[in-house]
Structure formats: C-alpha cells, structure tokens
Amino acid sequence: MPDKNFWDGQRVLLTGHTGFKGSWTALWLSQMGAEVLGYALVPETKPALFDLLSPVPGLNSVVGDIRDPAPLNSAVADFSPTLAIHMAAQPLVRRSYREPVETYGVNVMGTAHVLEALRRVQGLKAALVITTDKVYRNDDSGRAFREVDPLGGHDPYSSSKAACEEVVSSWRQSYFESLGIPLATARAGNVVGGGDWSEDRLVPDIWRAMVEGKSVILRNPESVRPWQHVLDPVSGYLTYVEALASGRRDLPHTLNFAPAADSPMTVREVTETLGAGLGIEKPWQLAEGAQPVEMKLLTLDASLAAHTIGWRPLLTGRQAIEWSAEWYLARHRGEDVKAKTVAQIQRYEALADTAATT
Image (cartoon, helix red, strand yellow):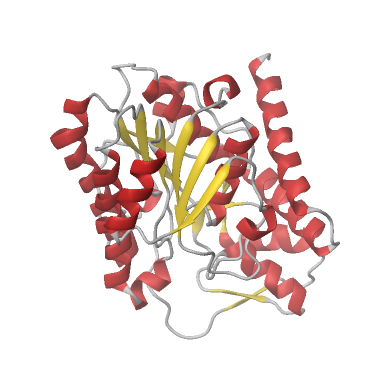
C-alpha cells in the first residue's frame, strides 16, 4: 500500500489526470496530502469522472497537449516536481485503427516530450511511465506474460505503447541514469471502476445499455481479460514510485501489475455478472459483421512486483465488478459520487491494513 507519510508534501507531476485512471490517482494523492500538477487535455466524455470529483484539494489542473513541448516544458519547470507519473495516452485500440498517426504522436512523441521536460528538473527523485499489458508480443499461447518477454503488437495502439517502452529505455540509459534519477515503466491490463465512460469499454457500455434499456453489443464475448479494479494497479504504481525514490539499486526497470489468479473472466461472464447486478435481463448480444482483430487471451505474471516491492492485488475480479456496479448505482440514485469515490479509496486502504496484519 502507498505510504501516506511518504506522499504528504510531495510535488507530483501527473499527466493524464483528467482521464479515468488519472482521476482516481489524483484524488488518492490529494487524500494523502500531495501537491499535484495535472497536465492533460480536457475530458473527452460527458459526464466525466474528473468533472464529478472537482475540485480536488491540492490539484493544480493545467489543460495542455503533451505533443506541444513549449507549454509543457514551461509548466513542468515552474512546478518543479519531486516525483512524476506519466499516464497521458491515446488508450483505445479501435480508435488507434481509425487514427494511427495521432496514436503514435501521443503515445510515442508525447512520452519523449514529457521525459525531455523532466530531465531538466532539479530535485526530481523518480519518474514512472504507465504503459499497458498490450506491449507484449502476444501469440495467444495462454501463458501469462513476464517482464522479460519480447515486446510487440500488431494494432497501432499496442505497437505504439511497445515503442513508448523503447523510448523510456533509451532516455533512461542516455540521460536519467547519469542524472541519478530512477525511471521505470509499469504495465497493467483492463481496469474497471466507477466513473469510466470511455468508448469501447465493457463496463461503460453495459451501464449505457442499462440506462437506455438495451443489450450491450459484444464483439468478442469469449475473449479473456484479467479484470481488476482501478485501485489495485494505482496502488502498485504509487508503491513502485516510493521504492524508486528510496534509492534502492535492486529494482527492475519495469513491473507488471495484474489481478488475483481468479480474476481472468471472459467478456461474456463479466457482462452477465454486471448485468445481473444492475438488473438487466438480457445484458448482451453478439455484434454483427467483421470486427478488428483482438487477442483472445491476455494475462500478466505479477510475481516480480510481489517479490521486489511487496505488492499484491486486494480485490478479485468479481469484487472489482461489484465495486463498479455499486459506484454506478450510487450515481444513478443521485448520490454524491465524490464522497462515494473517497469512501471506496478508504475501504481499499482498510482492506490493505487488514491484509498487513494477517
């Protein structure tokens, strides 16, 4: 679990803070007393979790495009962060097919611009770049991928994030190591949780279907994904940053953050589980026509994170879906979703405290 005493008073650059995962991260950092510079585009969805959580104490939100280096350099230099977490990305596979050049521009050159801005910061203790489980060259063998496996990806999104990993590796060896600044990447899979309204994502699609009284359209119902609640990988990211900033020399340059062993479920199973919880009688139907190619099975081996920084997931896949349904139902009933989000963070922290004493 993240150490509140470590984060209290830290100055954290968080790119992509207006996104789903970034919004959860910004709020958690705020709860621990960090001062955060968020740098991102405006939220793409209406509603957006970032808007529902605002204002977040201690968060200075800057609207900016990481593909434009001049304002990025200025904002980072003025803030002078002690730590950095780079989440900003074009994260959608199907959009990457439609907009491949934009996807590479954000995920590859955008990352290079962020690293260029950071390597000029005096007093930076550590930086972490968030990529994805899709960076691995997936042969659909069913084997859980480890950090030493080869990278690749046939779709523009996966390929761009594998290229992002190469950018980070180059900047680490060329600049950051000589500056004494730890720079690493973190890889995680499909996350769920309250407040995600992105296109082509299962839980938002199910929620929209419920509101509209329709069945969700599934492209690949038997595809298996390692579903995890957003708080599990975010806790891993923050714990990893703490370890990097501690000066430890034995840490790997990348870590996987995967859900519990019982978490992989088919898209169909997740849809039926969540649909039942939300009261949908017929939650899905099969999409018609040809669909873009997606890997049928994708899982990660997170044993290295357990051995090196002591991280383990706290929620099963089914619990992740239940927590998500709980959040969306609260929103549907008109409850204060900011309070609900804070409450789930506190509930997660309590689970960690219990796990640490057993």
